Length: 312
Picture 1 (cartoon, rainbow, N blue to C red):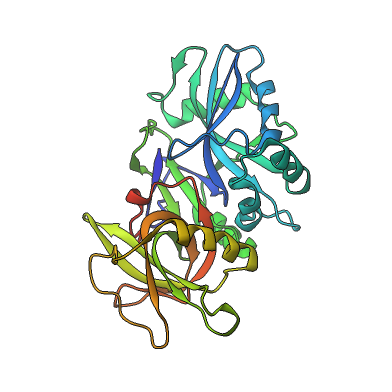
Picture 2: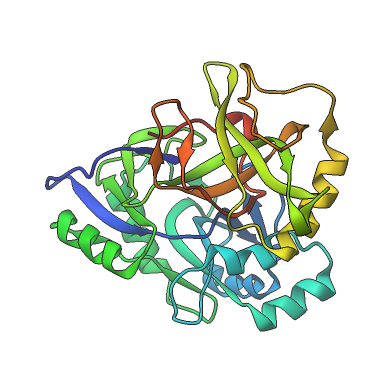
Protein backbone atom coordinates (compact mmCIF):
# COMPACT_ATOMS: atom_id res chain seq x y z
CA UNK A 1 0.00 0.00 0.00
CA UNK A 2 1.27 3.46 -0.89
CA UNK A 3 0.51 6.85 0.59
CA UNK A 4 -0.86 9.75 -1.43
CA UNK A 5 0.92 13.11 -1.29
CA UNK A 6 -0.93 15.98 0.31
CA UNK A 7 -1.33 18.43 3.15
CA UNK A 8 -1.22 17.21 6.73
CA UNK A 9 -4.70 15.97 7.72
CA UNK A 10 -5.92 16.81 11.20
CA UNK A 11 -8.60 15.10 13.26
CA UNK A 12 -9.24 12.33 15.75
CA UNK A 13 -9.43 9.73 12.99
CA UNK A 14 -5.76 10.30 12.05
CA UNK A 15 -2.52 9.08 13.62
CA UNK A 16 1.02 10.00 12.57
CA UNK A 17 4.27 8.15 11.91
CA UNK A 18 7.75 9.31 10.94
CA UNK A 19 8.43 8.87 7.22
CA UNK A 20 11.63 6.86 7.20
CA UNK A 21 14.34 7.66 4.68
CA UNK A 22 15.12 4.15 3.48
CA UNK A 23 13.93 1.34 1.22
CA UNK A 24 10.43 -0.04 1.57
CA UNK A 25 10.28 -3.81 1.92
CA UNK A 26 7.85 -6.60 2.74
CA UNK A 27 9.35 -9.35 4.91
CA UNK A 28 8.09 -12.94 4.70
CA UNK A 29 8.96 -15.14 7.70
CA UNK A 30 8.10 -18.85 7.79
CA UNK A 31 9.72 -22.28 8.18
CA UNK A 32 11.92 -21.57 5.13
CA UNK A 33 13.46 -18.54 6.82
CA UNK A 34 13.33 -14.80 6.12
CA UNK A 35 12.78 -13.33 2.64
CA UNK A 36 12.84 -9.62 1.76
CA UNK A 37 10.90 -8.25 -1.21
CA UNK A 38 10.94 -4.70 -2.57
CA UNK A 39 7.87 -2.84 -3.78
CA UNK A 40 8.70 -3.77 -7.38
CA UNK A 41 8.93 -7.45 -6.37
CA UNK A 42 12.73 -7.82 -6.37
CA UNK A 43 14.25 -10.26 -3.90
CA UNK A 44 16.56 -8.24 -1.63
CA UNK A 45 17.32 -11.00 0.88
CA UNK A 46 21.01 -11.44 0.02
CA UNK A 47 21.74 -7.71 0.32
CA UNK A 48 20.85 -7.49 4.02
CA UNK A 49 22.05 -10.61 5.86
CA UNK A 50 21.71 -9.01 9.32
CA UNK A 51 17.92 -9.02 8.82
CA UNK A 52 17.85 -12.82 8.96
CA UNK A 53 17.60 -12.24 12.71
CA UNK A 54 13.97 -11.25 12.08
CA UNK A 55 13.19 -14.98 12.28
CA UNK A 56 13.01 -14.42 16.04
CA UNK A 57 9.93 -12.21 15.55
CA UNK A 58 7.99 -15.20 14.21
CA UNK A 59 8.74 -17.43 17.19
CA UNK A 60 5.49 -19.12 18.19
CA UNK A 61 3.79 -18.37 14.86
CA UNK A 62 3.45 -20.41 11.66
CA UNK A 63 4.02 -17.54 9.25
CA UNK A 64 4.30 -13.77 9.37
CA UNK A 65 4.36 -11.03 6.73
CA UNK A 66 5.56 -7.58 7.80
CA UNK A 67 5.66 -4.23 5.99
CA UNK A 68 8.32 -1.69 6.82
CA UNK A 69 11.42 0.26 5.83
CA UNK A 70 15.05 -0.82 5.66
CA UNK A 71 17.04 2.06 7.15
CA UNK A 72 20.74 2.83 7.49
CA UNK A 73 21.86 5.40 10.05
CA UNK A 74 24.25 8.30 9.59
CA UNK A 75 26.90 9.03 12.22
CA UNK A 76 24.44 11.24 14.12
CA UNK A 77 21.84 8.46 14.20
CA UNK A 78 19.46 9.98 11.64
CA UNK A 79 18.39 7.89 8.63
CA UNK A 80 20.81 8.14 5.71
CA UNK A 81 19.63 7.16 2.24
CA UNK A 82 23.14 7.80 0.92
CA UNK A 83 24.59 5.22 3.32
CA UNK A 84 21.88 2.75 2.34
CA UNK A 85 23.04 3.15 -1.27
CA UNK A 86 26.15 1.17 -0.35
CA UNK A 87 23.95 -1.80 0.54
CA UNK A 88 21.03 -1.86 -1.90
CA UNK A 89 22.72 -3.29 -5.00
CA UNK A 90 24.98 -5.94 -3.44
CA UNK A 91 24.25 -9.50 -4.59
CA UNK A 92 27.41 -11.27 -3.49
CA UNK A 93 26.82 -12.85 -0.04
CA UNK A 94 30.40 -12.32 1.16
CA UNK A 95 30.42 -8.67 0.16
CA UNK A 96 26.96 -8.16 1.67
CA UNK A 97 28.21 -9.61 4.97
CA UNK A 98 31.25 -7.31 4.93
CA UNK A 99 29.12 -4.22 4.32
CA UNK A 100 26.65 -5.30 7.00
CA UNK A 101 29.48 -4.96 9.49
CA UNK A 102 30.56 -1.50 8.30
CA UNK A 103 27.13 -0.01 7.50
CA UNK A 104 24.44 -2.03 9.31
CA UNK A 105 20.74 -1.52 8.68
CA UNK A 106 17.57 -1.88 10.74
CA UNK A 107 14.08 -2.88 9.71
CA UNK A 108 11.49 -0.38 10.93
CA UNK A 109 8.19 -2.25 11.09
CA UNK A 110 4.93 -0.39 10.55
CA UNK A 111 2.35 -2.93 9.38
CA UNK A 112 1.21 -6.56 9.63
CA UNK A 113 -0.11 -8.20 6.45
CA UNK A 114 -0.38 -11.88 7.39
CA UNK A 115 -0.43 -13.95 10.57
CA UNK A 116 -0.72 -17.73 11.00
CA UNK A 117 -2.44 -18.43 7.68
CA UNK A 118 -4.73 -15.41 7.81
CA UNK A 119 -4.36 -12.21 5.77
CA UNK A 120 -4.90 -9.12 7.91
CA UNK A 121 -5.31 -6.70 4.99
CA UNK A 122 -9.04 -6.25 5.64
CA UNK A 123 -8.61 -5.27 9.28
CA UNK A 124 -8.60 -1.59 10.27
CA UNK A 125 -5.14 -0.11 10.77
CA UNK A 126 -5.80 0.26 14.50
CA UNK A 127 -6.40 -3.51 14.80
CA UNK A 128 -3.33 -4.40 12.72
CA UNK A 129 -1.25 -2.10 14.89
CA UNK A 130 -2.57 -3.69 18.09
CA UNK A 131 -1.59 -7.14 16.79
CA UNK A 132 1.88 -5.85 15.92
CA UNK A 133 2.40 -4.50 19.41
CA UNK A 134 1.41 -7.86 20.87
CA UNK A 135 3.78 -9.75 18.56
CA UNK A 136 6.91 -7.65 18.17
CA UNK A 137 9.51 -6.89 20.80
CA UNK A 138 12.45 -4.68 19.74
CA UNK A 139 15.44 -6.66 18.51
CA UNK A 140 19.04 -6.08 17.44
CA UNK A 141 18.09 -5.20 13.86
CA UNK A 142 14.42 -4.27 14.05
CA UNK A 143 11.81 -2.26 15.94
CA UNK A 144 8.29 -0.91 15.57
CA UNK A 145 7.85 2.62 14.35
CA UNK A 146 6.10 4.88 16.85
CA UNK A 147 2.50 5.92 16.25
CA UNK A 148 1.63 9.42 17.49
CA UNK A 149 -1.88 10.50 18.48
CA UNK A 150 -2.89 14.12 17.98
CA UNK A 151 -0.98 17.37 17.36
CA UNK A 152 0.32 16.45 13.93
CA UNK A 153 1.51 20.03 13.24
CA UNK A 154 3.80 19.97 16.30
CA UNK A 155 5.23 16.62 15.22
CA UNK A 156 5.80 17.95 11.71
CA UNK A 157 7.71 20.91 13.16
CA UNK A 158 9.89 18.51 15.15
CA UNK A 159 10.53 16.46 12.02
CA UNK A 160 11.57 19.58 10.12
CA UNK A 161 13.88 20.65 12.94
CA UNK A 162 15.65 17.26 12.84
CA UNK A 163 15.97 17.33 9.04
CA UNK A 164 13.92 14.14 8.67
CA UNK A 165 12.06 13.25 5.49
CA UNK A 166 8.50 13.87 6.67
CA UNK A 167 5.40 12.27 8.16
CA UNK A 168 2.86 9.67 7.12
CA UNK A 169 -0.68 10.25 8.41
CA UNK A 170 -2.92 7.17 8.57
CA UNK A 171 -6.64 6.82 9.21
CA UNK A 172 -7.29 4.51 12.12
CA UNK A 173 -10.01 2.74 10.13
CA UNK A 174 -7.97 2.30 6.93
CA UNK A 175 -7.76 -1.15 5.37
CA UNK A 176 -4.57 -2.21 3.60
CA UNK A 177 -5.03 -1.72 -0.16
CA UNK A 178 -2.28 -3.91 -1.60
CA UNK A 179 -0.34 -2.30 -4.44
CA UNK A 180 -2.49 0.84 -4.48
CA UNK A 181 -1.98 4.47 -3.53
CA UNK A 182 -4.72 5.47 -1.11
CA UNK A 183 -5.76 8.85 0.37
CA UNK A 184 -6.35 7.08 3.69
CA UNK A 185 -2.55 7.26 4.03
CA UNK A 186 -1.02 10.70 3.42
CA UNK A 187 2.68 11.45 3.10
CA UNK A 188 3.75 14.97 4.01
CA UNK A 189 7.25 16.12 3.07
CA UNK A 190 8.48 19.49 4.36
CA UNK A 191 11.15 19.46 1.64
CA UNK A 192 10.58 18.72 -2.05
CA UNK A 193 11.88 15.29 -2.81
CA UNK A 194 10.69 12.49 -5.06
CA UNK A 195 11.66 9.81 -7.56
CA UNK A 196 12.42 10.55 -11.22
CA UNK A 197 13.18 8.34 -14.21
CA UNK A 198 16.43 8.85 -16.11
CA UNK A 199 16.00 9.26 -19.89
CA UNK A 200 19.44 10.47 -20.90
CA UNK A 201 22.63 12.17 -19.86
CA UNK A 202 24.71 15.20 -20.74
CA UNK A 203 28.48 15.15 -21.00
CA UNK A 204 30.44 16.92 -18.32
CA UNK A 205 33.14 19.53 -18.61
CA UNK A 206 36.81 19.70 -17.62
CA UNK A 207 37.57 16.59 -15.54
CA UNK A 208 34.26 15.02 -16.57
CA UNK A 209 34.66 15.59 -20.32
CA UNK A 210 33.37 12.54 -22.19
CA UNK A 211 31.69 11.16 -19.08
CA UNK A 212 28.43 11.79 -17.26
CA UNK A 213 28.04 15.40 -16.16
CA UNK A 214 24.32 15.33 -15.44
CA UNK A 215 21.31 13.03 -15.80
CA UNK A 216 18.22 14.02 -17.80
CA UNK A 217 15.16 13.21 -15.74
CA UNK A 218 11.41 12.92 -16.26
CA UNK A 219 8.14 11.50 -14.98
CA UNK A 220 5.26 9.60 -16.55
CA UNK A 221 2.14 11.74 -16.96
CA UNK A 222 -0.98 10.32 -18.70
CA UNK A 223 1.10 7.81 -20.63
CA UNK A 224 3.75 10.31 -21.74
CA UNK A 225 7.34 10.54 -20.51
CA UNK A 226 7.72 14.23 -19.66
CA UNK A 227 11.08 15.95 -19.28
CA UNK A 228 11.62 17.52 -15.83
CA UNK A 229 15.15 18.92 -16.10
CA UNK A 230 18.57 17.53 -15.27
CA UNK A 231 20.60 16.81 -12.15
CA UNK A 232 24.37 16.79 -11.73
CA UNK A 233 24.87 18.04 -8.20
CA UNK A 234 25.36 15.16 -5.78
CA UNK A 235 26.93 12.77 -8.29
CA UNK A 236 30.03 11.43 -6.54
CA UNK A 237 33.00 9.50 -7.88
CA UNK A 238 31.45 6.16 -6.90
CA UNK A 239 28.09 7.01 -8.45
CA UNK A 240 29.78 8.17 -11.68
CA UNK A 241 31.51 4.79 -11.96
CA UNK A 242 28.13 3.12 -11.49
CA UNK A 243 26.47 5.34 -14.11
CA UNK A 244 29.26 4.70 -16.63
CA UNK A 245 28.12 1.07 -16.76
CA UNK A 246 24.42 1.98 -16.88
CA UNK A 247 24.69 4.48 -19.75
CA UNK A 248 26.66 1.95 -21.80
CA UNK A 249 24.04 -0.73 -21.15
CA UNK A 250 20.88 1.35 -21.72
CA UNK A 251 21.94 3.58 -24.63
CA UNK A 252 19.43 4.27 -27.39
CA UNK A 253 19.53 6.37 -30.56
CA UNK A 254 16.51 8.62 -30.00
CA UNK A 255 15.00 10.58 -27.11
CA UNK A 256 12.52 8.66 -24.91
CA UNK A 257 10.87 11.94 -23.83
CA UNK A 258 7.47 12.75 -25.31
CA UNK A 259 8.37 16.35 -26.09
CA UNK A 260 11.53 18.25 -27.01
CA UNK A 261 14.36 18.59 -24.51
CA UNK A 262 15.72 22.16 -24.48
CA UNK A 263 19.38 22.20 -25.55
CA UNK A 264 22.08 23.22 -23.12
CA UNK A 265 24.95 25.29 -24.48
CA UNK A 266 28.15 23.33 -24.81
CA UNK A 267 26.59 20.01 -23.76
CA UNK A 268 25.98 16.93 -25.88
CA UNK A 269 22.94 14.82 -24.96
CA UNK A 270 22.88 11.03 -25.05
CA UNK A 271 19.63 9.07 -24.74
CA UNK A 272 18.80 6.12 -22.50
CA UNK A 273 16.02 3.61 -22.15
CA UNK A 274 13.92 4.92 -19.22
CA UNK A 275 14.70 1.98 -16.97
CA UNK A 276 16.41 3.61 -14.00
CA UNK A 277 14.78 5.45 -11.08
CA UNK A 278 16.66 7.95 -8.94
CA UNK A 279 15.81 9.97 -5.84
CA UNK A 280 16.21 13.74 -6.17
CA UNK A 281 15.87 16.62 -3.69
CA UNK A 282 15.03 20.02 -5.14
CA UNK A 283 13.97 23.54 -4.17
CA UNK A 284 10.72 23.82 -6.14
CA UNK A 285 8.96 23.18 -9.44
CA UNK A 286 9.64 25.82 -12.09
CA UNK A 287 6.72 27.17 -14.21
CA UNK A 288 8.08 25.24 -17.21
CA UNK A 289 7.76 21.95 -15.32
CA UNK A 290 11.44 21.53 -14.49
CA UNK A 291 12.90 21.16 -11.02
CA UNK A 292 14.94 23.99 -9.52
CA UNK A 293 18.28 23.38 -7.75
CA UNK A 294 18.08 19.58 -7.87
CA UNK A 295 20.49 17.32 -6.01
CA UNK A 296 21.07 13.62 -6.73
CA UNK A 297 20.52 11.35 -3.72
CA UNK A 298 20.89 7.91 -5.29
CA UNK A 299 19.44 5.10 -7.39
CA UNK A 300 16.25 3.28 -6.39
CA UNK A 301 16.11 -0.39 -7.32
CA UNK A 302 12.83 -0.73 -5.41
CA UNK A 303 10.71 1.48 -7.69
CA UNK A 304 8.95 0.65 -10.97
CA UNK A 305 9.87 3.34 -13.55
CA UNK A 306 6.42 3.24 -15.16
CA UNK A 307 4.79 4.24 -11.87
CA UNK A 308 6.91 7.36 -11.27
CA UNK A 309 4.83 10.53 -11.68
CA UNK A 310 4.98 14.10 -10.45
CA UNK A 311 3.87 14.19 -6.83
CA UNK A 312 3.10 17.91 -6.59
